[in-house]
Image (cartoon, rainbow, N blue to C red; front, side, top):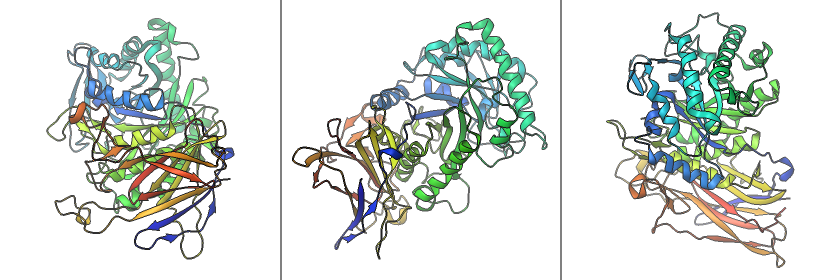
Amino acid sequence: MLLAQTSLAMANPISFSVGSTASAANAIQPLDGFISYSIEFSSFPDFAGNTSNPNVFSNTLLDNLGSLAGIKPYIRVGGNTQDYAIYNPELTIAINGTYNDSRSPDYPTTIEIGPAYFESYGTWPDVKFSHGFNLGGNHDDRQWATLLETAALACKALGKDKLYWWEYGNEPDLFATSSQGPVRPSNYNESDYVAEWLNGTRAIRGVLEESCPDLLGDDTYGYLAPSFGGTGNHLKAPRTWADGLDVDGDIKLFSSHNYISGAESLGVTLQGTLMNHTRTALSVGAHVSENATIRPGVPYILGETNSLYNQGRPGLSDAFGAALWGVDFAVYGASAGVGRVHFHMGTDYRYASWQPVPTAKTALGTKPPYYGNVAAAAFLGSDGPSIAALPLDGGGDDVVDPETDVAYAAYVGGALRRILVLNLRAYNYTLNGTGGADLNPAPRPVRTYRFAGLGAVTAAGQAEVQVRRLYANGSDAVTGIAWDGWSYNYELDGGRPVRLANVTTGETARVVGGAVAVEVPDSQAVVLDFGAGAEVR
């Protein structure tokens, strides 16, 4: 059994008492490509480019994750704007969108797409996509024709090699209550939705029978659904399944959406909202409970997620603290039984992992959340691990803080491979976290985390453990971020990994007497890698 303790290493270290942690028997194996993405439908041409001008920067960032995970992220193309998109076969550009700031300043709410839109599916090698069809309609009588026409175009653009699954409708549980404008009456219920969904998906299948019959096999035809916006909205998933959502047996992934809070919600802070493991566990737990209630017999995924809905808040969703949140959120989800997470992105979105093109609002570049995605993918690895949370129990006068002291283990074949430690206490690099030129004069506290009960790693009972850090100057930092000394910034080499000379790398820790200790500054994450040859149980 592993044992864990923490201590505060400042002038006089304070030790926490030892507590019991989980073992491999509690671990859960997630799906491959666990760290994946959801891209706003209207932003997809920006992120992917087209056949004559592919977005190489985006593809490079996906390649980086693929090298860590053994497979590139799965891409869901959807979001609110999939239900605004109307097909115009005469349109000579990929997309023509009109913004209405009273509905949303962040994406167009009146949209036409043309045949060129589907070129974007051909720009990223070795990536599988789900295409989101328009169910909401946006009060446009061309909705049904759009569904039939785009089904034929999408299936030909994707084919067997690029198709993930299909999706029909985004967050239909909000159709009657959406702040962007309701598209269904207030009495719209689960059975109404199920009838619409079955009618539309059967029509899609009919199009595929004519246009892409090779996509009708059990391994190529199916949906991620119902893509509800959460667990407590106008429509409820348990009733939806009970009303026959999967009567045709074509739902391959039970997909739901999650945001910890809202960009405009009162009281939202880095420490209290994002860098707060208790808040994360409660949020994910609602989804785990929902899945346990329904037991649909297919994997449960978060098909769209990120920090704060309404595209994030500046200074929170685009700061290093959000990267740490992303690591904790993703890995906790894996440990709790979520099969895959798709972090949502769009052009100019504050919570996006990268900005794909320069705009008047946002510079082209890699953003802090991407580094969290990389760190999580590195911990999960490509060796098919099972993941378990390691509760750090304290005692006496000095207790571990469950909101900020977090650890996980990755097991392969029952053997310990990696430990992830997060110190989620916020440390502001700038004075009062304002992001200004004045720096915080207070020293950055460092905690020591000790894991015991590791057993004999080698015959001598000692071994070196590789230590890799997710690092920035503080939780409020928006630049100067590195994973294991690597930068993925666009301005260095177009997003390719560049080793920084001013960051310590090659760090190791010793396993002595079946225990290993590592120091972790506030607002930092560390991965301890025991290597494929270390049979730690």
